[in-house]
Amino acid sequence: MKNIKLAGLNGNGRTIVKVRDVKIGAGFIVIAGPCSVESEEQLLKTAHAVKEAGADMLRGGAFKPRTSPYAFQGLGLKGLKILEKARDETGLPIVTEVLDTRDVSWVSEYADVLQIGARNMQNFSLLKEAGKSNKPILLKRGMYSTIEEWLNCAEYILNEGNPDVILCERGIRSFETYTRNTLDLSAVPAIKELTHLPIIVDPSHGTGKLSLIESMSLAAVASGSDGLILEVHVKPEESVSDKDQTLTPEQFSAIMKKVRPLSAFMGELK
Ligand code: PEP
Ligand code: MN
Image (cartoon, rainbow, N blue to C red; front, side, top):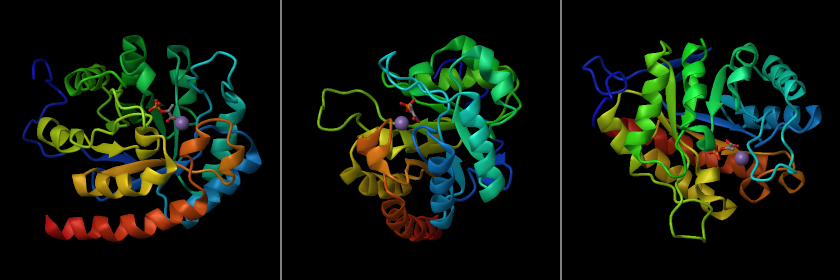
């Protein structure tokens, strides 16, 4: 692959991204939480529930990239303050999306990991700004992007001096309509043979369907993924975004009870 200079394998082993006490790329990690931060009560209850079920980090969007300008756009600063409170109460590091170059530096003061979403994967100004941040970046694969294009985007961040990039496979658009996206799990071993960066999988956006999330989470573990990111809400039926793919804490806990032993078994096979 041309011009994948910093992200490409370099003989120095695999990158481990440290986020407080969590190490991404060393052992299997799980990030869980709602699609959007909606209220203090919703986020805190969800945060405690995912912590109880064994999550390593908390997700929640304060800035939402919505298809319609009339849909809920996120709580912004208020949402970040709620995330901060959830981190204080649970100890879980927080992952949150940043949509705008103007927000990168101040959102970094709240977030432990900045997410760049699928729709912004090739927003080169945002990538450069993220590269100047001192926070790790969770770079989701664009829904129309090849692996090569995705790695070039990681390269933009690395090239600005930020070494901490975590890739996230979240499904790509295909002719299939039964699922929201087509989760490309072959990207996981492909990424491992092309780069030293860690990669996690998002079966929530990758399938868009509750009934498929457990199977694809287990398949992600078997594919060699370094972790999962899953949407969980204390009351999914009240979720303002991505309701159809949002797990209850009980469903999340049931998945975790299978994911943990499977990842331990995978570790033994190495
Ligand atoms: C999200 O994580 O809520 C999100 C919007 O994801 P993606 O960018 O993968 O669609
Ligand atoms: Mn979502």
